[in-house]
Length: 83
Image (cartoon, rainbow, N blue to C red):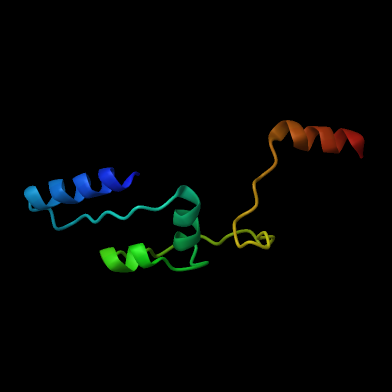
């Protein structure tokens, strides 16, 4: 979401007196890291959002802390054929 989209969503929540939703701007990767408990984000804290993840990241997390990209099914077949 863009900054403008987040601000508009917050204004709409306020205008509709919605108290059961909160909005924070995160990339998909940041959401995965926050949900899995890998790291926290100031934007979530500022919005009062607590993510309680129900799953864990794979054990082979890359050095930069991001989850590895799973190989495509065609790559798996190619590797199996090479073996």
